[in-house]
Image 1 (cartoon, rainbow, N blue to C red):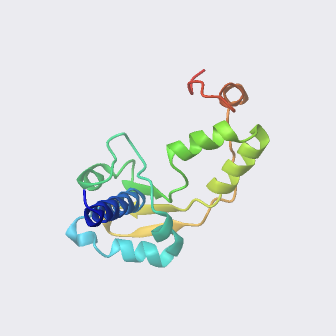
Image 2: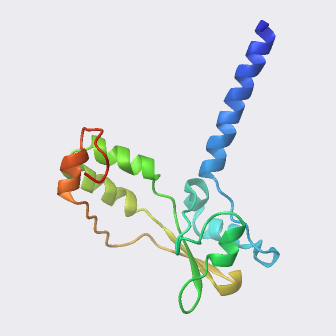
Image 3: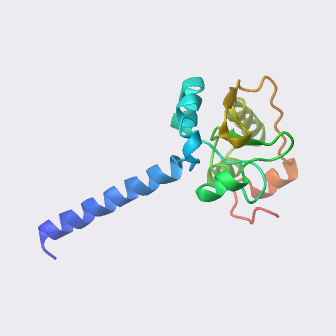
Length: 157
């Protein structure tokens, strides 16, 4: 392989890696045409939500992509819920494995107390962004932490 091809190949890998990371952290809501104004309304009420992103919430059917619009509305009255993104499952497991118990509880508390909740009314007519919670309670089983902390044991020891 020539030096030029090697440089091009490395550049393409860096670009691909950047696009994958961006896509994973900036999932876009696929909304019906009548709801195209919602993202701007949400961003106006919660500018940091645009940066951090959201987590789909509800039944196992609620997912990103075209399924979101079909399955997001839950309960009576029907509403869709989007908590602002706090951390990935991998981040959570790493934190639990590498942080002492009391520090883990404090860290989780501090992260979740910043969570915003976007509430979308039925038919995507309106969206409200609730303020961060005033009370956050964090529970993490101490025996589980003792088992997994500073180890590579399975999560369900």
